[in-house]
Image 1 (cartoon, rainbow, N blue to C red):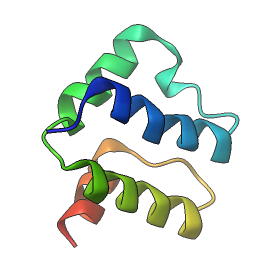
Image 2: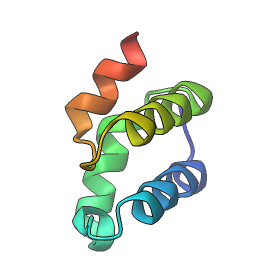
Image 3: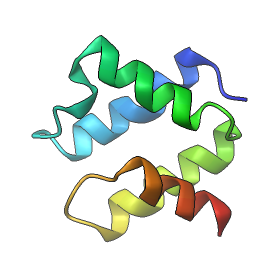
Image 4: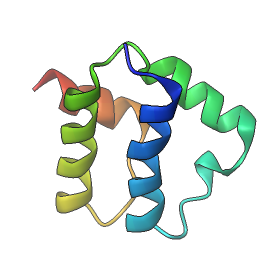
Length: 71
């Protein structure tokens, strides 16, 4: 399980890569993302997010991240 602090570190990278991505700006949205991704190991989640950023010009969805984590 990933800590909230580590989750926010990873998703600050998403904000930097996709400056128009406002999804995580509200506390409610950020909490929802955390709740749906907190069961994933830090390294696995981080690698999935980095993979998405390197291959896609649009920000990820929760389901896209989870799919990448399963690979």
